[in-house]
Structure formats: structure tokens, C-alpha cells
Image 1: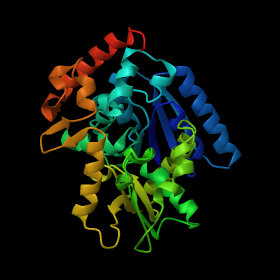
Image 2: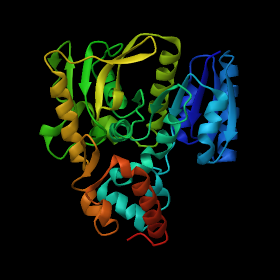
Image 3: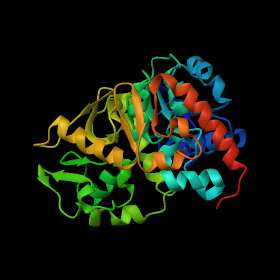
Image 4: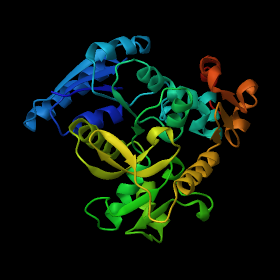
Length: 344
């Protein structure tokens, strides 16, 4: 039986486990005892109701013990569905820290978003790793840190699924989309809209076709991302071939059309679009979120630099990959201080 690991016990981890379509031995690793036990219990019963011999085992741990737990389970693959910065904190626990996140965007917390995935990748199990936490930006950072993951999940996957449905397609094999986390909302400039092609011909009205998806409840959309993540885990574990769309492939920023086959992920370029052209689009959209990458550094621009300047001037313009531990510690300290202050 295939061994898999899911890190996290929130809505995305839960949606993924409930939708997993194959028999597997799944360890779910998380800090919250009640949440991870409940998740595994419900997922176990769902599997039994579907006639699948899938086992879900809760593993309660501190993040410092993550590597040891992964090594003990020795999974074929790992889904990272948790970070040390929740995207829901601005809604659930407003503070001066969440004011900072609103001002600069989630990229302000980029190192925090990457922390768990970084530890999972360094666990030394040889497993493939799929990261669901801001993969359009986190996966390029992980590659810069020498800890690349196979791909991400979500973001472009949701957008491509919405376009597939709007166009009445049975699957994504005829569809090519280039899009980014930036496109979960309509861009301020229509020229920055996501790109899509059907049978090699540009799709018109992409923004209008994505309007319903963009207007949907963000937490509720984790049900869709969980289904996409479960399908990806199953495809990678069984070697099934599928044309789909994934973010953060091989450390590239943004999202691309891909073919998943035989446990690997390969880019499939839109007709007439070069690798450099597709990469340039995603790097431009990455810059719209205030981040760029070079061979050794993460660089911050607007709006991230403006948000970090008053509270963390040392890192307001970015950081060297070699200083990842330093910026991570500094961000934790600033967050602790700002969380103690009221929002507004």
C-alpha cells in the first residue's frame, strides 16, 4: 500500500484527505491534537463508506520533530498543507500584524509560508514533496535555498478548472493556461490578466469567465483545492498520465500547464509560446506581488518593501538565501510584537 504524508490539520488538509481516491497508508502530521484526530477519524470513515482500504493515522508533533516523524513513516510522497502563517489570520485574529499583511500582501510573510515546506524537504526521506502554501512564491524560494519541491497545488489549478468548466471541456488536455496567485483576484490592469488558449487559439474574455470563481468564498474554495490535491497525490502515486495545471513546478514562479505521468511533472507549453515567454509573464506577475528572485537573493519591491520598511528595515528590500534563518527569526519576533497590538 502506498505510504503518503499530509502535513496540517486545517481545511485544506481535511478536504484533501476526504477526497483521496486511492487506497493508501496516510500519516497526517499536525500540532493540533483535537483537529488532527477528528480529521483522521472522519477521513477513515469516508474511506470505509467508499469501500477503500485507506488508513489515516494522526501524528501529533511540534514542527521541530517533523523530520523524525517523516523518516519514521518513510512516505512515497508528502503534501505540505500547513505553514507557520495562516492566510486566515487577518479574518480570525486581527491585530497590528494582520494590518501589515493587508498592507503588503501575504508575500510579507514569505519566509513564514516556506518554513514548514523547507523542513519537510530537508527531512531526507527521498519522498516527492508537493507544497500547497503560496507555491507561486514559496517554491522559487525553496529552490533558491537548495530544497526544491516537485510542484505546488492550488491557484492556477482553481483558475484552470473554472475555465475548463466555462468552456465545457471534459478535461484540460486542450486547454493551456498561464496564471499566477496574483490572478485569484482581477488584476487592476486588464493587460495583466491571465492567459489561456484552447486548441492553440487564445481564449477571449478570460476575466469574465473567471468572475464567478473569483467571487467565491476563499475558505470554501479549499474544497476545490483539496480535490485537486487529492487527485495529484493519487496520480503521482499510481503513475497515471494527466494534462493539468500546477503552480511552482520545479521552482518556477507562477503556474503553468503540465503533464503528470509516471510520477513526474513536465511542462507542456502553449503553442507558439516559448519557455522564456511563459516564464517572463509569471515573473512579471510575481513582481506585482512585490517579489523577485535572482541567483542568490529574494528581492522585495512594492508593496512588500513599503510594509516592511517601518518594522523590519534590515530586510525591507529582501534577503540573501544564505540569511534565511536570520530573516525567519526576525519575522517571528516582529510578528510576536505586532500581534500584541490591536488592529487599526
